[in-house]
Length: 380
Ligand SMILES: *Cc1c(COP(=O)(O)O)cnc(C)c1O
Image (cartoon, helix red, strand yellow):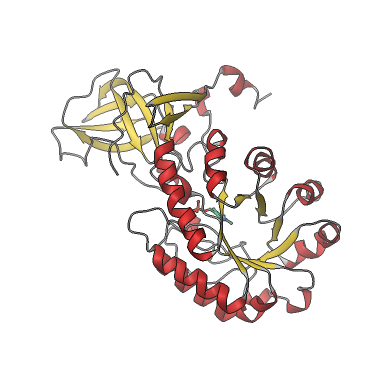
């Protein structure tokens, strides 16, 4: 990815900065897939729900996909267009709101479908069922919907052709940061188990995890798979990626608070792995830092760590050309997705500001700054 070269000296840290120009590039790729195939692409809010840029995203995509009530309400209020819902189970006291605001609702089991069918029959919602492809593509166990004993989707053995009356669509979600060859294999598995039911459907949702906007993603294969599928079964195909919308669009900018030493130099930052980039610990992965390299590659190696009291609040070891000093700013790359939607105020540290950057005017806009009241208001 090319470096972020805007003048960041005026920014208060920590802050997430999303570059509207980089976002526009991703959206162009996604719009192109829609134009080539007539598939509809939805933003999975789970991965990226920064509503100050919803105007830009909804201009390019067909709608949004929610996982629970608050995401659904946010999409209804600020995204517009189609609203789809998919979750492992719905609560009885929320289904009426969902039937009022959602266009598609995907049920994870025949028992949920049976329980809520009367509400759906009374509404304009197009109901669907989530399938479990029973085909593994994702190597990280906690991100694998087809892991053993997975609760996500209906398996072939539990499928009930006798209970399809009223069902208009089928849904599967089996990928995580994967290329279109993984989709091809998943589609083959899904067709093998459930292909006989596709002809009677209006739509099939291929879920998320398609890394469409990554430079090495095979967009041609994706388009071919979608077009073949739509031609064969006469259904509308949906995709609902989260990451693909936001990959490489955002940065987490932080400052060095202190340099300490324990057998190696340690830089304590004003941002935390645990609170502000939880996937660094959960996935786990090593984020890129602009201008930094692997340990000992450049002259000065540091362990970068957060300001919380969690011993494991460590981002990783990185080397720099120059010695770090207090007040230096560091730029973590690819920090737009699965950060703002997952972060916490653990230890009572503030969340990073949410900032947009407009490359044509070179202006930063602070969309949100968090205060003590935000911490207090989610406790009592
Ligand atoms: C997580 C998820 C998505 C989005 O996944 P990305 O990896 O962000 O593209 C879409 N649909 C469902 C059902 C999901 O669970």
